[in-house]
Image (tube, rainbow, N blue to C red; front, side, top):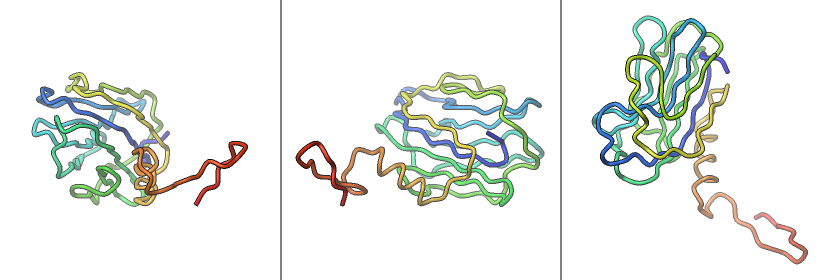
Length: 168
């Protein structure tokens, strides 16, 4: 996993009493620079790339704190200078045309906490946290949400004799 291109997806049920900056996950390079996903003090999910000069952050428009389970994702591609936040399979909030200069291999990962000065516990129940070394497409994010969201919209099947499945 390299810091110049990645995707993080996670399900979170953010507790209503989890006020303040609460960290969901963190990635750190060997030089100590890091990125983190967290819930802001206004209840909106955010992605903070702390590495490099003039870091740019992106936030969801939707407040999710205390509102049940939500599917979150962030994609980062430094080569295209893009980062995008997603909520429940679709882009939510502003995308940024800026990440940070440079790259480097991830040497440490955390779930339920992060790196840097904000070390508050997660303040949420997390499930299915996945780190990927590719900046996934919007279609890929939507398909992950649809297949993980316990719904029958994306794929349905019938049980046939002999336990063979026929997909439609």
